[in-house]
Length: 389
Ligand SMILES: O=C([O-])CC(=O)C(=O)O
Ligand SMILES: [Mg+2]
Image 1 (cartoon, rainbow, N blue to C red):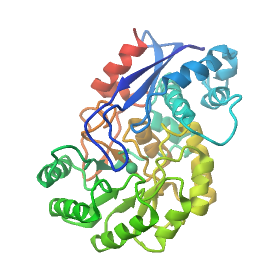
Image 2 (spheres, rainbow, N blue to C red; image 1 turned 90 degrees about the vertical axis):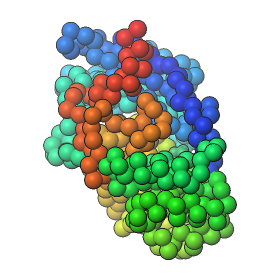
Image 3 (cartoon, rainbow, N blue to C red; image 1 turned 60 degrees about the vertical axis):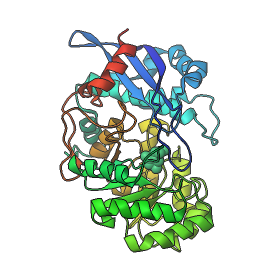
C-alpha cells in the first residue's frame, strides 16, 4: 500500500461579506487529494481535504516543500503496519521534517489540509465513518451520535440593513438552529448595539446569540463593548482582541464574567497552551475554537486536546471554528462540545451532508466511510474533479 500522488488546487470562495477585520472578496482555499493504490469498490481510495475559510489557499507552500517530502519518503515509512493502513502520525512527522519550532505562520494550514485528506483516506481504507474510527481508537468506542451546532453568519455587506440581518437569523432558526452568531466591531458601538437588538427581536433571548469581533478591539474598546453587552447575557463574546494578545484577554475577563470564546487563530498546541496559561480563560464557562484545518490537522489537534486535559479543561469546552465536516467528525468521535456551521456562506465548503437536518440545534453524521464528503454533492463535485481527473 502506498500514496501514489498528492494533488492540490486553489479554488475561490470569494463573496462580498466582511467581518470587523477582513472582507472575503478575494478569499480562496486549497483542496487536496491524497491518491492511494488501495482499491475499494473497484476504485482507488482517494482522501480529500480543504482548508477553512479565513486563510488563503496554500498551494505554494505545498508545492515548494511539503508534497516533495511525502513523494521522497520510503513508502513503507508512511504505513501503519499493524492496521495495514496509512499512518497519519508518520506522515505528519515526514511533512514536518526540517521545520523549526515556533512561528507557525501559514505552514500549519498547508499541513492541516493534507492531514485532513490523509485521515479521510485512512477511514475509507478501514471502511468506516471517521468519527467512528476516532471513537474506536481513542475513546473506547463511544462516539456521540449527534453534535450541537450553531449557525454563524451575521456578516456585514453593502446594503445589509437590520431587516436583512433579521431575515437571515430567522432563516437559521427555521432550519433548526437554536443559537446564531453575528459579527460586531465593523460599526461603531451604538450601531452594533442596534444590530444586536434587532437580532434579539428575532431570536428572543441573549442566550441564543453569540457575537464575534474577529480580533478587532484594543483593550479599551473590548471593555467598552463588554460593559455594553453584559445586560444581554449573550451566548458568548468572541475574539474581542488580537488572537495573540493573551494579556488583553486576561484583563477583559476582569470586566466580563459571562462566557467568552477565542482560539480560531491559534495554530499549534503550544499556542493553545499559552492561551490557557496566560489568557485568563475560565474552564467553567469559556469556549475555545481551535480549528484542525488551520492548525496542522488532527495529529496536532490530539496534542492540543491533551494539553487542555492536562490543564483541567474538558474537551466539551471546544467548539471548533470552520463549519466543516472534519471538525464535525472530531466533535462526535473525540467528544467536543459542538461545531460551528455556516448554513449560507463559504459554500460548497461550509455546511454538512446533504439531507441531514438540524434538529433543536443538533446534527447527525452520514454513515459512509471517511469524513463524509461524498454525501455533500456540490463539495464532492469539486473534490472529484481534482482527484479523479
Ligand atoms: O469571519 C471569519 O473570519 C470567520 C469567523 O471568525 C468565525 O467563523 O468565527
Ligand atoms: Mg470567529
